[in-house]
Length: 225
Image 1 (cartoon, rainbow, N blue to C red):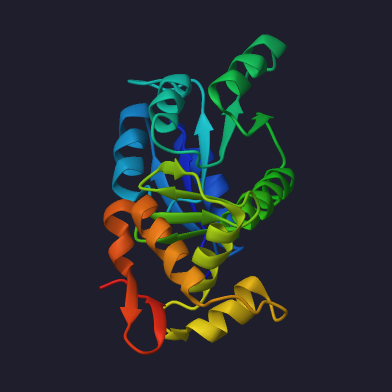
Image 2 (image 1 turned 180 degrees about the vertical axis):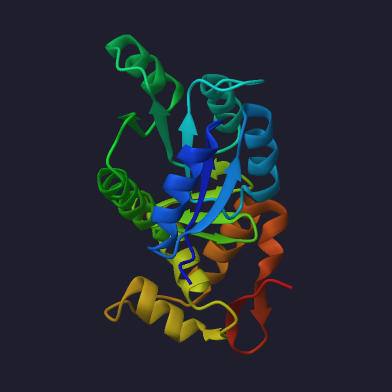
């Protein structure tokens, strides 16, 4: 079973069924909503597993724009807007609100699938470069670290040291091993430099700093418990 979940939001049952049946052939997991209010409810209940949303514009209770505004307040999940309209002004408005793609009805299911796969390839690839350790989020591409959503400032060496600990989660690392891998093999300095860097990193991580454990007589270990 594919681990990608798509939320289809459209007030036309026939349209939802058409899209659903086609995506099921590709093993996508499907969630549905027939109006804007239901869409927000389904999203709130499943936001941690929804990978993409197909969102109709003209719907009862809440239109697609209103739904999109609510979703964008807490999530950057990819959204493809489905609309019978084809006016440029509507498309520009959608992009301002955070639409990732725009497709006008009627459309070919194959074209829709191609758009979905292209967006997922990009966004899921980006997601792989983001790793979260109980609120410590490291972005390998941007070389940034956030703690509970707030970015912290680390020196290059502090970043590399923290990343090495995270990459070796639950493994006790000797000071020599850390020196060899973070400061590289031609470093012959005092291993106490590691201790001072660890102290600074713990301080910057705040309450999360407790996850860096001191292993007496050995070195350090990153462990979430």
